[in-house]
Amino acid sequence: MAGRPHPEQGYRASLGLMRLGTRYGNERLEAACERALAFDLVSYCGVRNILVAGMDRLKVEKTAVQPEKPHANLRGPGYYS
View: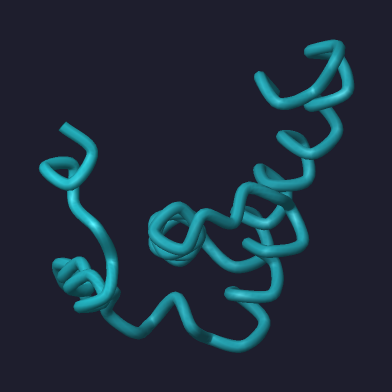
């Protein structure tokens, strides 16, 4: 709801998410919401699609992203000092 200009606009999406809990069960809804947050999906459609596809039953792999090494031709901060 914080992403909306008016909090009232988020009520409808919240009610839709709660309705998904009655259709798919609260455990599956929790798993789908956890997966959606891991992939930065913050919409009703994103959570619904996870539930429909059954992706909530798969574990979310939390891997650390290794930053890429800079290109050899890039100048570092020491170049400009």
